[in-house]
Length: 206
Image 1 (spheres, rainbow, N blue to C red):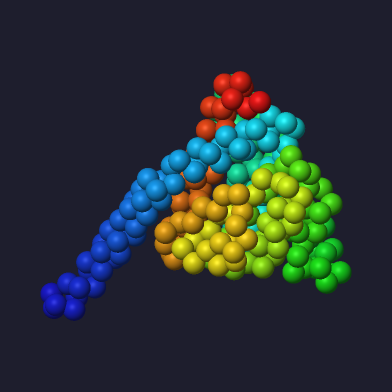
Image 2 (tube, rainbow, N blue to C red):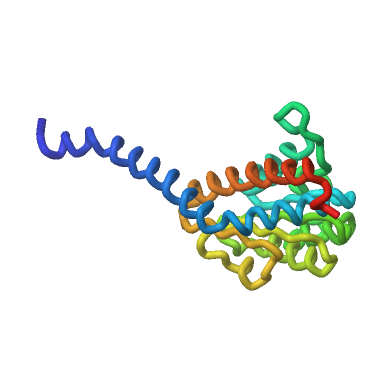
């Protein structure tokens, strides 16, 4: 076997090892750095739910699936005995979104939906891997104007998210979209779980 053949044989193994290392090290660094703010965000979310608020999540492309995922986590708890909490993925409303695009409001469609259905006691959660999605940023900006609780989940560039200064901006320290998505998914699972921990101590929510 030639040196080139040996290199080609072990290249996939090295790729898997590098990918696995990133998938372990980046989330670990993120959660060590953000643990206190995550707890604060969970308390703030639980208080909004306690007051009758809803979670409204949104994002484009692959991030749209995370918006759908986090919404169903709250509406349909996978752990028996946990209460269902109101949540909606704005990305699911294809009729309204496509109608807004036809009406040339497509660049701020999430913001338009929030202006119609958003309430001060609600929670807005915007997903982006770069923070440069104008529609998502515009929606978070409008949510702040409505006095909704705002959470931005993004990658290391942060983009417009950092300028918006949402109540909580969680920046995954990576530019790799796969690692960002993996970390964000773990994050909203933690948010879901800790929100329910606060509901087990409702005196903290007044």
